[in-house]
Length: 118
Length: 114
Image (cartoon, rainbow over all chains, first blue to last red):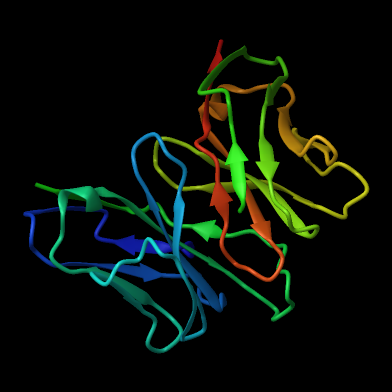
């Protein structure tokens, strides 16, 4: 399978615990995105990487959230001291960007990592 | 600020018929892109079609076409000859020039019946 891969697919944790999600993008894609989707809503943008640089970050990404893409390949999203409001589907997407100011191409999404905080 | 509005929480259509899913948007940027994604029950978002704000013609991709009315700020998705496999959530999204962030609407659930 050469699509975007996310692990784990499901995570149940207790409030206050830390969780980490991993995303493996399509190999030739230099851009990687994290979104969060709650029930009945569309995805909300969290952050964006071009190679290893984190270039955009939403205000939704509080201090408890951190994302990395250390070698410009896979990415991790860590949530510290989880709260019940963090329960959501965390979606990763990737694309290939040419560096043009307005990239018109599509994002390829993974199947998401569903987080439940008890 | 960017905003996408999808006013149809659910739509029903019979197989082989056409259906239109509504999307209106708000932006002050003259240069932007509009997207439609499909999300089946598996959760994966699947890209369907793209329309640039300066594109003169409406975008088409197979059975999907985008009815772009710039003055009305609407970007409705038309699915022709619906199939059972089209049953899914459909999201309209927008991105302004210079930014990578996609802003999504709340989605429309489409159910195709035999």
